[in-house]
Length: 127
Image (tube, rainbow, N blue to C red):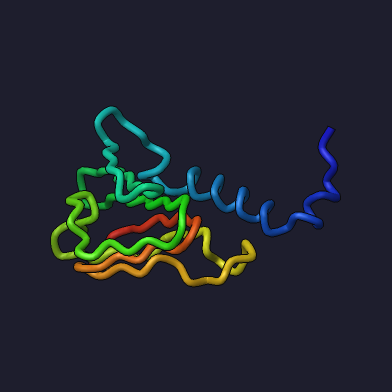
């Protein structure tokens, strides 16, 4: 039986799970996982990227880092390139203060990507 008082004691973790479930339910790219619609690559000893493709350049990028902070310079992995005419913007990050984190998040430029320690971030393209 669930002890709902645990939600108060572990509010940050509870909010994290609620937000992840909401993201999966409401974001069409993460919800629709068609065959061939996902590709991935290892970025470092403890980090990887998954790209969820769409036909209309509305891809999503999931970056996960299980280790220490990690900088990709140059950011040469082809999956990190945004759709033409776009840049990446954070849609969700585990570094949110809502989850007890620092709020630092991933820093992305076309040449350099910085992934915080033990973090995950979902990016979406914007013009």
